[in-house]
Every structure is written in C-alpha cells, then in structure tokens.
Image 1 (tube, rainbow, N blue to C red):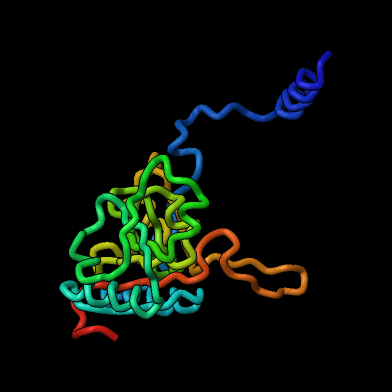
Image 2: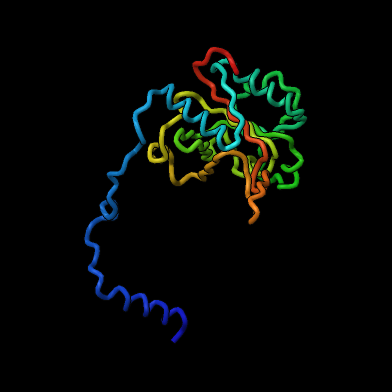
Length: 219
C-alpha cells in the first residue's frame, strides 16, 4: 500500500459517520453576516478610507477630479522620479507635463529592468474603507501585477466615490474572482522577531494614494 492510499484510507475512515451534504454549495455556509459595520454617508466612508490608509503608513492626497495630472506630476517631481512605469490603459492626461521618462508595461520586461525604474502610476479596481485596502485587478489602467511590486514608489489614483466601498464583502461583490487580484494595505513591510519594521520587502517602500473626486482643490 502506498503512502497516498494509506492517507486516503484514514480520511475515509474518519468521515465514515459524517452525514452526506445533499444541499448545494451556495447553501453550505450561512452568508447572513454583516456586509458593513455601521451606517456611513459617502463622505464618512471616504474619510474612513483616508484614515485607515494613513494608519497603514500610506501617504494620502486629495484633489478634484480634474486635478489628477498636476497632483501626480507634482508627486513625481517631489520624489525626483526620472522614470515611471505606465500601464497601457492609464489616462495619458494624468502624466501630462511630467518630465519623467515613461516606461511601458512590456510582457518581456525583466524584474531587473523594473527595479531600475523610479516610480509606477496606476489606477485601481476598488478601495475598501474599513480596512484601508486598495485592490488591483490587472485592468489596463493598472497593468501587470509585477509593475506594482518591484518599483520602490507606487502612486495609485482612486476615483471618489465610484471606486470606494465600505467593506470587504461589498468589494467582493464588485470584483471578478477570475482576475489577478492584488490587495494592498499600505506599503510593503515586515518585522523580525524583535519587531523591527523593514519596508520594501515584498513591494514598494512608498505608497501614495490620490483620492480624486469632488474636493475643493488638493491638500
């Protein structure tokens, strides 16, 4: 008897007295849990998102919908970025006036080439207020997953309020599970046994989130 047959035999014996599940999978687990915690207005939801993003060490900026370009180019200039990765579907107006060289998201690009790029600018699929999480799904304005993991500086534009939801369950209702989802809660960081925090281990050291919507100018 092989190890595989031995293990499966033990599993079958352990399940011998377990009644069969005749119900459909969708009914196997109760899904009557809360979709969001408390009632909030749109403005309160956006404020909660900004608060939790900042709590995760992301840098939050706000601007009017028409001021994304000067906001993004200003952030690149302040960073001293000379090169920036640009997803194929990113709004070209967002980088209008930027002096940085635009590097396309090429399928044959190598991690070493991406590591030499200063910044990356993307849109997002959704932003979750209760967890301060940005979700990318590989859409044209976000590009391949690796372009947001290798460069040291990520600027992510969130359209407010269209792309903001209160909770993870609400986000899951709007996301396509077949797409390559990346869930980002602040810049990449880890800690050793002494709790010394090190940033930039699994992704960018700096995450800047631009909340673009019906705001009175930027701040």
